Structure formats: structure tokens, C-alpha cells
Length: 257
Image (tube, rainbow, N blue to C red; front, side, top):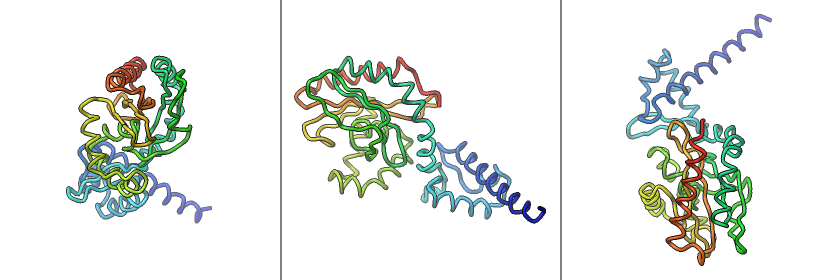
């Protein structure tokens, strides 16, 4: 019994140290945390902290800004969090989707971030005779592409946006023939307008409009988009749809997680 107990204690200690380090990085995530600060916060030798951080980076739970030598939470950690939030987010905003589709007569979609992709967790069809069925429930798409994907990317902290763009660049080119600078241009426009616009980038002859959903901490956790055929999606109609989406999101309020 005594021999078996030591490994369990050692394993538990390593897990607690890892959790403490993740919490320390989380507290300084926006500005980034240097190794020395993390070590002080968790009261461990820098060498021990560095070793644990190296493993966390390999698993995508922590990222390192090499230029500034600052650590941030990794995208895989956000993906894990998104998995636990999907049901709550879907339940909270389903009525908003229904109201949006009723007003626009087009299909509306609810997406959350999962790593470097967006995942569709909700879809409501409208009454229009011809509709753009851009997503199936559970379908994944690169963050940064499409109206919802642009909304999910544009309001991330800059370091996370750039990491997503860096990782997704080969896939942007392979699947959509899109350059990263084009994605950055969409980000600038989306941040300026407060809503996203995707014209003929995912489905030919279709236009999408999207807007982000934030939580009570001001972090983007999901996005809602509407897609319609080009003939219906005039510039004025796109602006009107954007107002509808943002109004319905505001009526529900920020996500409490």
C-alpha cells in the first residue's frame, strides 16, 4: 500500500502544479506572462515551470510569443472549453435564431470556436423559397472564412487572431485560394462595422452576414450568421440583416460563461 501511494501523490502533485501554472497564465493572458512571473506566482523553480510549460505548448494548451517571451493560453484550451459550453450556448440563443430567421426569411446559423475551426451547433431555416444551406449541425469550417467565421476571428485578442491566421494559412490557400492578408482585411472591416460580410467566399452566388456573441467578460464565444442568395442580399438588405442579428443577440444578453 505504501509503495503504491507515493506514485499517486507524485502524480497528483504534478497535476496540481500544472493547473496552478495554467491559472497563472490565465490571469495574465491578455498582456502575456513571462516565465519569471509565472514561477513567482506558483512558487516553483523556473526550471520546473519551464518544463511543464513545454509540455503544455506541445499539447496546444499554452502558446508562446517568441518575440516578447510571453505565454498565453493556447487554442486547444479554448476548444475544450467550447465543447463544454456548446449545449448552454445553443439553448440560450435558439430563440434568437428563430426570431432572426422569421424576420429575414433566410437560414440562420450559430457557431462556436473549436481550436482553429468554427463548429455549427444551431441552424434554423427561414421561409424563403430558395435558401442557402451553408452548414449542417456539427459541420466544421476554418475560422476566418464565411460570415460567422470572420465574426469569431475578428474579435479575438490580437495574439490569438494572429496564431489562428498563421496555422490556418495553408488551409486558406488550399481550400479557398485565400491569402492571409485578405483575411486581415476582412478583420479590419468587421471590427469597424461591428458585423461581418462574406460575399461568394464559401458558396457561389451567396452572401453571408454575421455578428459575434460575447460573454460577460467581453470575450467572443460564438457567432450568428445569416446566408442568402446574392439576388436577395443587396447592400441595404445586408445592413438590415446585420441590425436584426445584433438586436436579437443584445435582447438575449451576453453569455454568462
